[in-house]
Picture 1: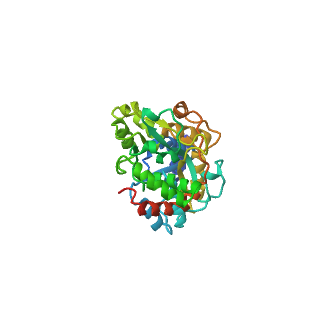
Picture 2: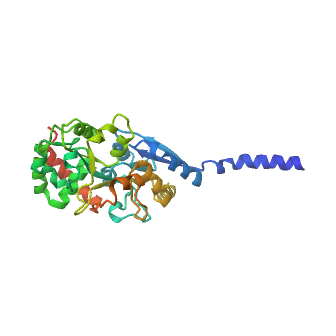
Picture 3: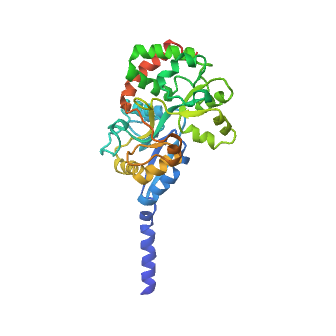
Length: 330
């Protein structure tokens, strides 16, 4: 009898084994490397028995999502930039979210929700380290021939310029970008960190970049020295606050809505928001989560521009048109 029970138990265990492994799989498209979020995804897998498959691609991912919209391959799209989320939503490739999340309204829509925030900041030489500066100050005479930036057409800069359009209007922005071009120390080139290197080399006094690059440079033995001559400033702290972009997520497939929204809820939980923000040195989107210690020690309490990110989307085409007309990168 005992032998039969053991055999039965073994047989049932064999049959039920899949139930205790991964019962379902969720596929994520992203242009971000999974390294920074992997610990969270593993925890999600352990808690839910839902396997996460990360499909990474740096090029052509948005076009792929749009082409596949009638028969989506991935379940969700996790992006490092709001413009990409809005592009696929406008193309009809996203599925509307069912549930509201405890995130400020300007950081979510029916089609996507933010996961973390990053600020567009200044890196400045010692000469300007103690000034309260704004984005509008970039066209001041004091910065004539002393500004460095990556391409004006990069999504991070387009987002910033779109926010200025929202605050000041099209005519003002055209004059602003024309003057900013004249204030450049060199043609736009490289990435955000390359501009800090240029400050270190004495090429310019001020550059535009995302705040988390400060920490990435601090952890790089070759780049850490650049920060000896470049300080970080969060602009517009005396008025509307610093411009923010987000990493965010959108649903692509209706059939897997339930597990996809489970993943989103997990990534927006207090515990996950704390880990996500600390590991990435970004700002949480949840208003109940304190800033990461490293960020808070650097910047204190930062004021952010609460401009609706969807409004930025409607401004992007105008911004690109102006950049083309004035040949900003030329």
